[in-house]
Image 1: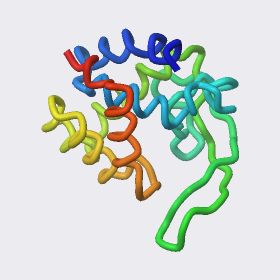
Image 2: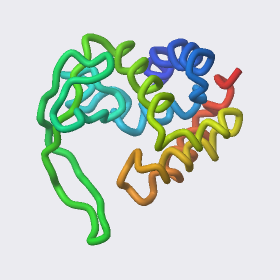
Image 3: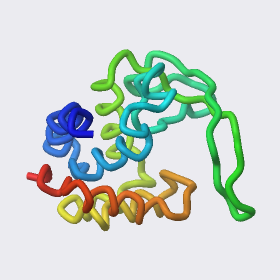
Length: 154
């Protein structure tokens, strides 16, 4: 866990300065979405955020798309699914694309009113549809608190 935090800390802090996405949120999302970098998608596609290919198209800093099994939640519950996820050349490209995507999409604009309030930023990103898990906000804030990721928000 310490090695993973060390891997993403400097790029997350850089992305906060460049894109205004709180480093603590970036890090918590990377931890949660990638299973500390141990999941199949981060290991084989360098995708640390579960970033999907919109309509199967390569966008941002991705170099390709690949289908992976996943879980999606809706009003009837959570179900297994297969989705098209972005493939990156490196973890750094994944981190950059995540912040670039959040900062450039209108649906996340409200979150940026809270760039200095990571818990609210996370809630706003969730409300805007980043994840389908109904517990996503509390999962992120729990990770930020447990590992004191707020210390990276300077």
